[in-house]
Length: 110
Length: 112
Image (cartoon, one colour):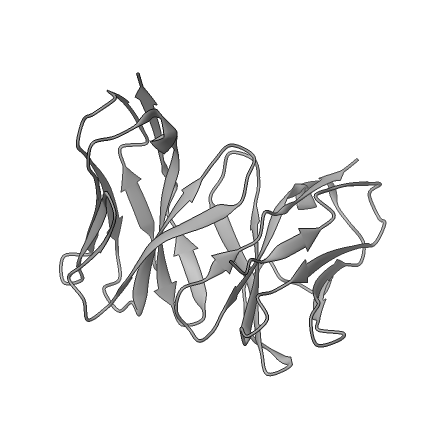
């Protein structure tokens, strides 16, 4: 059974820092991996999707990498801003469904 | 930019009552999904729907749950007899193919 874990559970950093969020999964037979952002009490905003054949994907200040063989993905956020404060979720595509991690709650303070 | 919409944003109901949660997926999308998130817990998959039928469902999606696409635009989740433990945020999502899933803002369901 696929299990998705995210470390750290929470992170608090000063504005301007570069940071890395980690996601690991137990079964490497995935289709894709998707990173989301969730603001408190809100829906999920898709940030990046990495296909299983890709190693990384970039969007603005975000860069996500995928190492299927080791069951890991990282989300790199460059030059963090207070507006980046949110919970970041990774989810692996397993057949039709997404299996989510527990999330990393990020706070960026001015 | 097209987005998934959901109504209502909040629903309060009594235990044992039926509720219908509504979603309008992105118009050219073919795959539709329901997920839920109990407060403080992970987002959990409930069901996927394609070509007017359920393609996959989780253990959570028992006989109390059903989904329907009553017309060309709406996608609904019905809970026949709500329980206290059904209290959660329910998210609808859609995708063109089995790729990026786009989520709606959610319906917060509270069962009393």
